Image 1 (cartoon, rainbow over the protein chains, first blue to last red):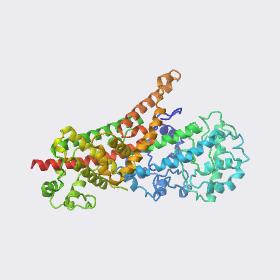
Image 2: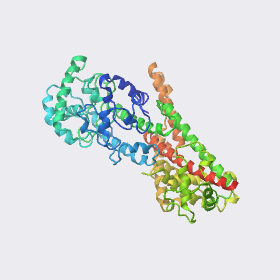
Image 3: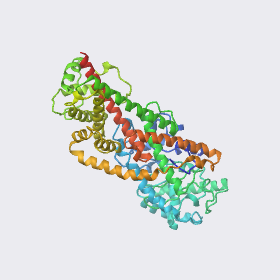
Image 4: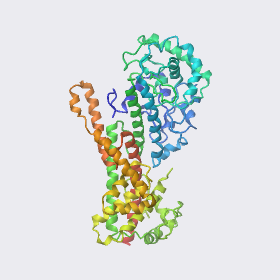
Length: 394
Length: 184
């Protein structure tokens, strides 16, 4: 897995960094990505966990949005401008989560996320080797922010970050260097609400400029506060300790995914890539958690992997067992579907009107009453690995 | 999006196609051979129900069409027209990935590193070792898993679990129905 990071398991850094966020803004800072449920906020495990979390602005915001967005709702002002489908597959909101647990076609859709992410990220990472400018965060920049801001937004057609971050982007854009967060030693303690999202942040670029300029002013104030508070973070100083105070990742212009390094995390390009990768893995592990029974409370990759392995092994053993059973029961391997259906099941099931249209799927050489089989199939719960009682079949 | 029940229907349809192949020679088979034939045809049917969209299904089809007595027959029968296309895809992908694995498998020994690592990082490296070991096991379980990186491994596992569930349900219902019929 990830090497050279200060994180070991994918689940734990989330806790630590969440802890680091200042308490007051916590509920809004945590990632709004529907597929993630931060363990400490994981009130509901299941398809509706997102809505059960009680983050009202996020709920109202994301209600009609496409699924799979990683959206940051930091300020309420930001809310209307937010999330764009990271995965623009036309999936409609929460119903997809319901289907995920039983939907085999999930896999078709998911790979597009990595394709999207990795493609952009490699571009971004490649630009990180540029030397840092000490003057990037110099105080001469603020006048440039606002006029550049719209430019930034227009350019960042697909990947947009927080406007706070964009204002950093615009600094760099003004200077023309894409750097990583080593140049910024701003510890956004109260701005962590903007920086909490470890995921890829995608934002609609419809931010009205009025909002953004207003936000910029707020951020400037906060910055000043922070600088007074910390004292160690000065503008325009190179980060000597990449692991500590710098918390903003450098942004490359245009279509890069804007990653934000959280406070207390390393910000060089490799660890950013690692972090993206780890986030992807954790997302998918959560989905697996919902699929594998009894894994709702497990946090930790190793244990979760254990459970998954056990489950897959047990499923495979069941297949073996059932095939052996079929071999013994049916020594001639002639699945006489007609006889099966007509004899037992027809009698046992009194007038079950099956609704699933089976006819086209079963057009083998033998005709048989399709209605019966339709009844048999749904009678077995799809998610039930245990053996159902026999009467249920008939 | 595929609903689970349509997946099952697909699977059943293809599976029956496959079973019809070996029903003619069924009497000469021993039980274990029958079982293998059943299982193999079921697996291929399940994999083909994915139409080559997932990596594990392609791997399964590829391995089935190479070895085995009935494997190739099953693949041809069940896949029908797609057979050529899918087997080509599967085998070519495997060849590419084999090279990757050969390069990767110059393994790193974690113990060597431990001497240089301070104590507090030992725990994290132990944890990483644990995770790696389990990942290796999972890779061996999922068909074609050894060729995948971790992110796609988890996706494939998801899909594979769903398919296995559907397969089990269908097989169980058929087994029960047959048994009831035999008993009457």
